[in-house]
Image 1 (cartoon, rainbow, N blue to C red):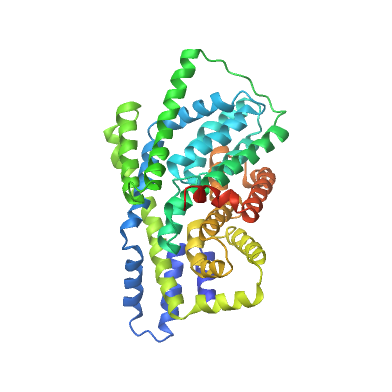
Image 2 (image 1 turned 180 degrees about the vertical axis):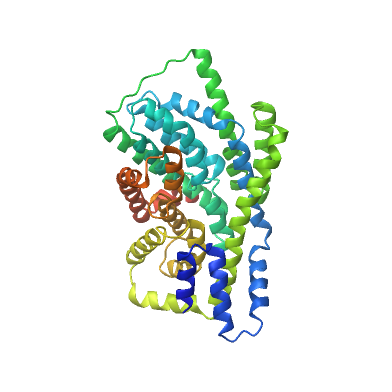
Amino acid sequence: MVYVILISCLVIGVPIAFSIVATLLYFMAVGEFPYHLRIVATQMFTGIKSYPLLAIPLFILAGDLMNESGITVRIIAFTSILVGRFRSGLALVNIWASVVFAGLSGSAVADTSAIGRVFIPEMEKKGYPRDFAAAITAASSVIGPIIPPSIPVIIYALTVTGVSVPALFLAGILPGILLACFLSVYVIIFAGHYEHKEQTKSSESLKSTLIQGIIPLLMPVFVVGSILFGVVTPTEAASFAVAYALFVGLFLFRELKLSDLPGIFGRSMRDSAVIMIVISAVAAANWLLTYNRIPNIITEFALDFMTEKWMFLIVVMILFLFVGLFLEGIAAMLVLVPILHPIAVSMGVDPTHFGILVVFNLMIGLITPPMGLCLFVADSIAEVGLSRLSRQILPLFVVELIVLIIITFLPVTVIGLPRLFGM
């Protein structure tokens, strides 16, 4: 009956957080908890009563500030200098602009929206089919939450398992770059026949473009570097990111006005509230599951049937890819990881490796129908229809699946950098 209530709520469009709370209330009403309303409220509040969680709204605010500071055009111009002269140059610029943008927003949806509004019309002018332009924009935006700083990674580390944030940040760099390389190879081979005209710039213009492109890149370097070397906590680094974004927008690029700030703050508060409500609801659910020893029971059951680590990793890949079809990534992670993480540790899977696998898996779900958020955002810009967009995204999904298999069974691609830094 519990699952019937949860699935019914999701089917009729009830937000995931409220669906979980409704399920909890029913479960506790028919169980042994006479003060279930008080317990649910207490556990929800306890789940978000954490200083490190302040990093989430701060990083969201920093990303919104940078997005409004005119950096998108500058990032595109910067990456165009680096890769735009190659075969399928504009598609390559799209991909590697997402790599740069990943260090600013940490959000795939924000990446799709910001870059897509510029790239989709521009790629169509250069001869690319509009649906292909939308598909490559959505597919490359998956890189956003993998390369640090990443909001899903912070949530994973702080609210789910307690894995080191610096280690996870470092662990996401190579998989993100690997994904960009594989997508680049795909567009060079299969999109090279589309028309692309070279653009020439004066040396002075090139110098100015490079300088303006490097300025946004300094933010993730400072943020990740300061966390990595123990100078600041993730929350303090997020505060620095906000200050840096304000300085760049107001004084360097001067495209951010004081009158813009109330709207930006309001939007960031709304986005943060959505995430926090999900975290609080799942925290209450996890408390109830732990009270009833559900994770222990599932762990014992899994260890009886999955005797090899590779078997467990394959099952996890399939599970998260399936769940990603229907659930938003952060919600799915908060629900499933507290159950699967102890099994992974028991199987000998490195916690940092497992964390990146989970994030990578669920971010692929952002480009898979029927619930892929990045697909919806890309289609809202391109207006080509989800059926056409889904056909174009399929081979790109296969490319990302290949990268997922590589990082799953070659752990050095994930944990190599953290170990190099002694983590």
